[in-house]
Length: 348
Image (cartoon, rainbow, N blue to C red; front, side):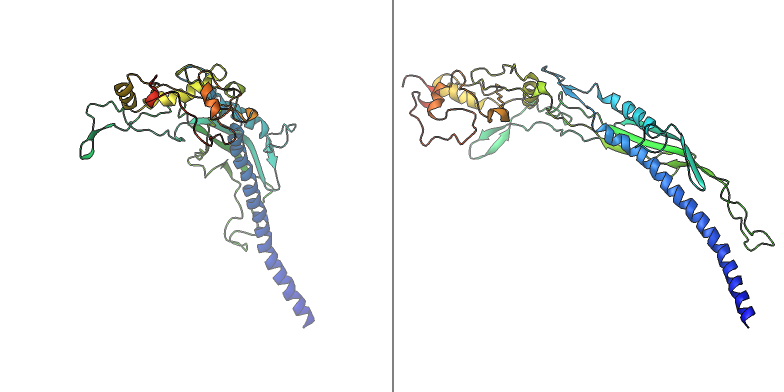
């Protein structure tokens, strides 16, 4: 009875090991395939994040075509070249290992290739529409639309000439993956064997960063939209003192910022009509200000957001506020007496 019991246990162990060995071997192989495929994914995503650190555009100090996007098309080739160099050994953390393959127990991967290109289908479109139409007053009713107005076209944008839809960057990576001969291809199979199916077939395949290979080609990509549109350079951070007597006069310290703001104003047809000017001229004979003129001032935090002195022509405002662009609350407790009459009419 004891001898029979020991024989049964041995038989059960042998039968269990036959299945266990197969499960363990293929479990290791599948785990290696999954792990190595993540390296390919990492090689494709890494250059996308690198692309966000590169300059997309510059702002030029000129009245038109202010946005300079000439450096944008150099981003994809640059990050692609860097990724191929860093991930040639499938590990972006090391720069001294010149091996072009990585080998584990049953799996080997080599020939990693990263490709990055400009993708104009990735976009954040600019707001586009026709300008709103002016309406003329109608006695006893709502105003009516003024005929023959030039409202532009539906593709117009107030940001034209400043920003462009240059798109983004897409990247993909692929590598050659193969099963090593260390994974035995035969194990107790055949007509006289325990298993009826072949144990393993050594295969070669494409490992793709996104999705599966179709027709032997990796087609999936990862994309990122680029464009900071930030006034971060020193040449677009200068001050623009207020010039109330000089509409449309360029700010010498920060011309790129000035031209960018004025371009939006120009694209929006400046003031909506000239009714205020016509009203002033009808009552007092002239308009004290050009309502379609462009005025812009900018002061940075280093100036506490205030003008260091009152601009020429605004001396009287010192009664109301010492610095005419703010900072601390500058509202006066009471209005100063004016030496001018309604709408600036002199001598009354």
